[in-house]
Image (cartoon, rainbow, N blue to C red; front, side, top):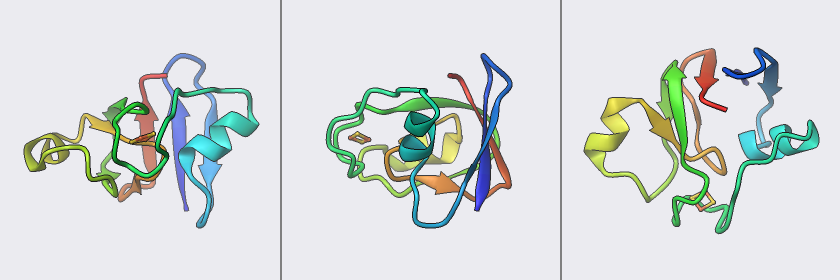
Length: 87
Ligand code: FES
């Protein structure tokens, strides 16, 4: 499990195993645009301000992954305990 924090509101949400960032946020009324929900299209791409994503998508290039400044919340997770998102 890991936490995501939204930069705009300061709200922190726990993401348990088996649930995606998108699922947890939408339950709390935070809607991120999605399409494929499988890490292919890049529609959900979100800027990461702090923390290290665990990229599970097939959309970003290796260079983009290594930069740690964006991720696909429909499927990707976190290696760090907290991700701060530009939402
Ligand atoms: Fe397609 Fe996330 S919705 S990559």
